[in-house]
Amino acid sequence: MKTLAFQFQNTESTYYLGESLANLGKYVDKDRSVIIIDENVDQYHGHLLEGWRKLVIPDGEQHKSMDVLEQIVDGLIELEADRKTMLIGIGGGVISDITGFVASVYMRGIPFGFVPTTLLSQVDASIGGKNGVNHGKHKNMLGTTNQPSFILFDYNLPSTMPAEEWHNGFAEIIKYACIQDAELFTYLEENKDRALNRDVDVLEYLVEKSVTIKANIVVEDEFETGKRRWLNYGHTLGHAVEKIESIAHGKAVAIGMVAAAKFSEKLTNLPQADTNRLIRLINDYRLPVTFASNKEEVFDIFKLDKKREKNVINFVLLEGIGHAVTHPVPLETLKQMLEEL
Ligand SMILES: O=C(O)C(=O)C[C@@H](O)[C@H](O)[C@H](O)COP(=O)(O)O
Image (cartoon, rainbow, N blue to C red):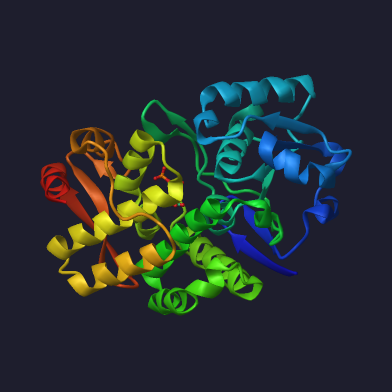
C-alpha cells in the first residue's frame, strides 16, 4: 500500500493506493460515516460493508440528477447526519460526482471521501474535486469544485466490471498520454495486450501514473483557469455525443479526442500522422472514433461547453502527441470544422 498526500487550496487529500475496501474502517469512523453506493456496486461489494450506514441509489448516468441528490438529502436528514458526518461515495463516476456535490451543499458542507470501483473512476472521476449533476442535455451543469479528504484505491474492485467498462477507463488514460506524456502513449501502444488482458502490474502502473498526472495538474490549477483545461481534452464534443447517443463516457471521450485531433491539424498544425497514431491506439483499446449524431444537435450542446467565454471556446488542442495547448477558438470556426468532420 502506498500513501500520497496532495495539498489543494482548501483541503489536504490523502490517497491510499492499493488498499482494501475491507480496511475502510482504519481511516474513517464507522459510526460517524454514511456511505452512498449504487444498487449494482452494493450487490457486488456490499458484503464488505457490514454495519456501515448506507444510502443506496439507482445505478446509471440518468440518475446523476437533482432528483437523486434530493433523495440523498432526505436520507441524510432521516439519519440525522450532522456537519461532522463523513460521506463516502463507493462506486463509479456518477457516485463520486453526486456524493461530492451533496457533501458540498448539505448543511453548507460536510467532509467526504471516495472509494472508486471502476477503472474510469480510479484514473479520473474520483480525482480533482469536480462534482455535480447533469441538467437537461448538459453534462455536469450544476456542481462545485471541492476536494475529498481521502480516496481509497482498491485495485481488486474493478475486476467485477464488464469488458466494455474496462475500455471506457482506457479512454481517460489515453487522454493523459495525449496531453502531456508521450512516453505513456508509447507504453500504451506497447502494452495493449497486457492491459486488455488485465495484467495486474500494467493496471497498477497505469492507475498510479494517471492519479499522479491528474492530481499534480489540479494542484497547479485547481479552479481551471489554465492548465487544468487540458484535462478536458476530447470532452467538448465528447459530452455532446454522450448525451445525444446515450453512450458511455469513455466512448464519447474517445470520439471527442479524435475530433479534437482533426481540429488540431487545422489550428495548430498537428501532423496527420499523429492523428492516425491516436486513431490506431483508440481502435486498439476497442473504443470508437466516429459519431452518428446530428451535427446541428451536437453544436447546440457543444456551444454551452464550460470553457466558453462569450463567442469563443478555450478549446483544448494538440501540437503533438504529449503536447496539449489551449486556444480561444470562435464558435463559428468550430461549427464549420464540425461540419467538415
Ligand atoms: O477534472 C477535470 O478538470 C476534467 O476535465 C476531467 C474530465 O475527464 C471529467 O470528465 C470532468 O468531470 C469533466 O468536467 P466538465 O467541466 O467538462 O464538466
